[in-house]
Image (cartoon, rainbow, N blue to C red; front, side, top):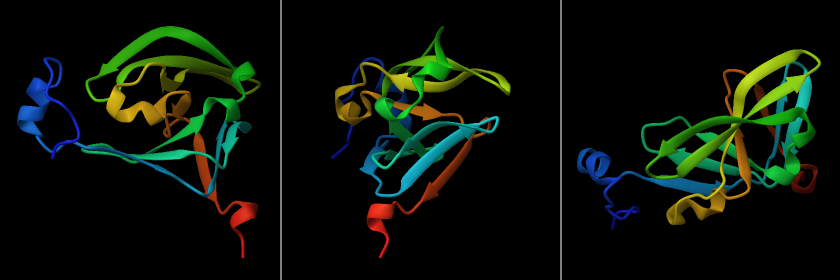
Length: 137
């Protein structure tokens, strides 16, 4: 059974990829995001998103992102499977990274787990994943 209901906005893409999926799993590892040498986010409650035709992406809870470093922008994009994405620009000591982080403020029902999470462009940030202290043997 397909994950996504056929709607007017999904009709075209689902005709080409009828089994399109967005799989969301909680990861136990600690995920750290840094940019220009500044740690901007760290979480042991991240989500790993595996999406058809896309590279895997980590989403971190907003509460684990240092929002004092970011300013909301007017950029918005649309994904028929996740919804409308909002963007933020990083302003840190090392400089500015425009629209480097995004979030689905009101995600589609099928991916509601993404609400209140944020993801970072990995070509402009450094991502590290390590075993959390609580999971070491």
